[in-house]
Length: 83
Figure 1 (tube, one colour):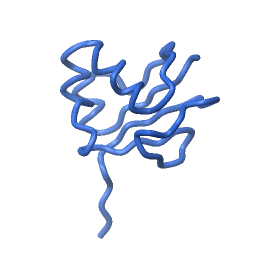
Figure 2 (cartoon, one colour):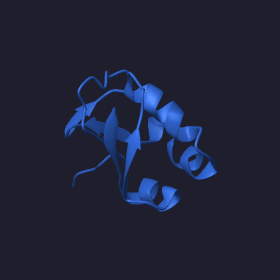
Figure 3 (cartoon, one colour):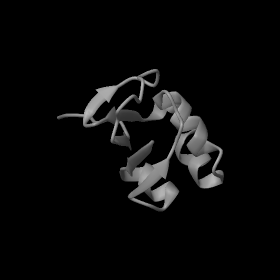
């Protein structure tokens, strides 16, 4: 399947891209993260510590075991704080 993958804030800075379209066979977000981390050190630096960022699938916050069936977009971003 093809996915639009979006990167925000320091994740975008580490990877060097704001977004990309990728072809993947990943079944879950965790599988997708593993596939991305295997791409090289930029991705590893940005995505290897899953406790340091959040993920949304089709603009809905999800956990890393969320299935990607029929997903079109995955976004990675740091936790947000309010004030």
